[in-house]
Length: 190
Ligand SMILES: C[S@@+](CC[C@H](N)C(=O)[O-])C[C@H]1O[C@@H](n2cnc3c(N)ncnc32)[C@H](O)[C@@H]1O
Image 1 (cartoon, helix red, strand yellow):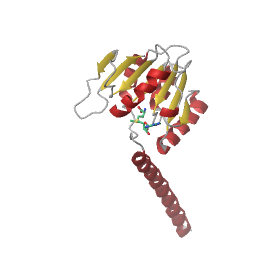
Image 2 (cartoon, protein in one colour):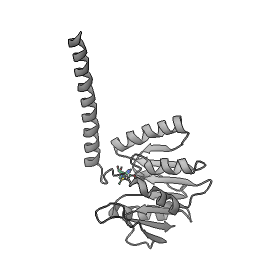
Image 3 (tube, protein in one colour):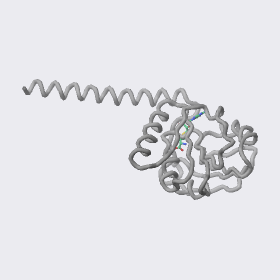
Image 4 (tube, protein in one colour):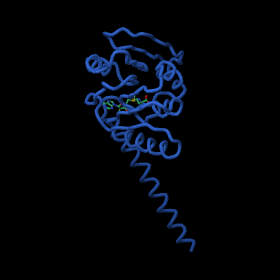
């Protein structure tokens, strides 16, 4: 009997280890494969992002490279009558965001759509608000798409990274520590 229980524990521990290892491999592979690694925005600046977006009823918000979707879930919890779309092309964060989207819809009635796609291929003409936390060169690569597709008045909030050739409406210093990420927010009106 004791040997039997010992065997059950052994196999349980083995499968848990295998599962954790699988998640780690998926995470490392996702980050090697992606041009921008999956690094979620620090949770305590979510309220700053929300304040700068100036959302209202009927807004349509896109998070380009939504990671685990934390920005959209936070916004959707506080501002439910709005459409939220997260675009993510890296497998690990996508699966995580998709699961959290299902979970939040089922248990908290928080509605966020998560799409697996390259955001360069997504039509953004219905957006009223865009959120980004990407890389400087990607911001510049996206600018011509934004200029072509975004409706007049679309508001973009970017954490850390700005365009080199477009002037921001607002630059906000988040007064973060020297070694902390996400020091600034840049706001643009198209
Ligand atoms: C720094 S993370 C930010 C995650 C999330 N927006 C947040 O602030 O917590 C950037 C994300 O963009 C995704 N990404 C990079 N290039 C992409 C592309 N062309 N299309 C879709 N997602 C992309 C990466 O996989 C990564 O998860």
